[in-house]
Amino acid sequence: MKKLLLALLVLFLQVFLSGCAMLPKQEPDYLAQMAEAAARADTERGHAAQLARDARLDKTGAPEARVDFDELLLLAQALYCQAGDAWCTGQLRLCAGEVLLNRVASPEFPDTLAEVVAEEPWAQREDFAALPPGKDCADAALALLLGERMLDERVVYRSAQPLGGGVYATFCDRRYRYTYFCLTENPELYPDTNTPTA
Image (cartoon, rainbow, N blue to C red; front, side):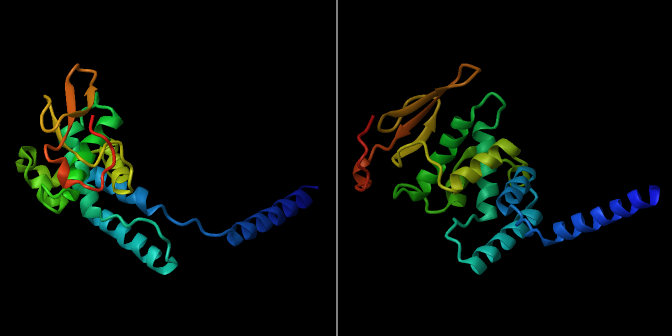
C-alpha cells in the first residue's frame, strides 16, 4: 500500500511540474522595478529595468508611455525635498511634481526637468544627486510621468503664500501648514487652455 501511495505521489508531482512548465512565463514588471530602484537611488538597477522595458516595447510595438529612469529619479528626489515628509498626502506630492512638469511644458521656464529642478534652492544640496527619495515619492513620480494630473497646466507656482495669477488649489497638511498652488501671471501664453481661471 505504501508503494502504491508513493507511486501515485510521484506521478502527481510529475504531472503537476510538467503542467507548470507549460504555463506562460510571467513578464517582469519593469515599471515597478524602476520605481523600486528610484526609491533607493539605485541607478544601476533602474537603468537596467528601463533598458529591458524599452527593449520589450520595441519588440512588441506596445503603445505604452516610455519612462526615462533618470527623470523618474530626479522627479522623485524633487518630491522628497518638497513633499517627502510623512504628514504630506499623496495628492500634495502629485501636485508638487505636477508644478515642476507644468514648468517644463511652459514657455516661461526652462525646457527640461533637470533645468527646472536646478533652479530650486533644495537642489543645491551636496547630497541631492544621491538622495534616496523613498517609495511614496518614487510612486508619485512614476504616476506623474505616466500622465496622472490634478492641476491646470497653467499652475506653475507652489508656495507658502498666494502669488502669481491667483490660487488654483490650497492644501493644509497635518502640521497645519498651507501650501498654495498658483496660476501663472501670463495666461495669454497658454492659448490652448480652455479651463477658466480660479
